[in-house]
Length: 72
Image (cartoon, rainbow, N blue to C red):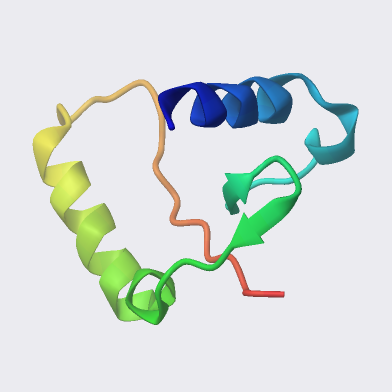
């Protein structure tokens, strides 16, 4: 199993076919997997982002904006 996932990660990192794809999960190089409805819920995303910001220094050199990805 670890070897199969390594193949998937290598493909996803190097393939032009998925180079513009973000916010998706893959079971294998050719099969997108769905995340749970809980993980796509805007209220849950906001709660996780607020928690994450609480761990960052006040003057972090970047802004965190939640990326809401619709399930296509």
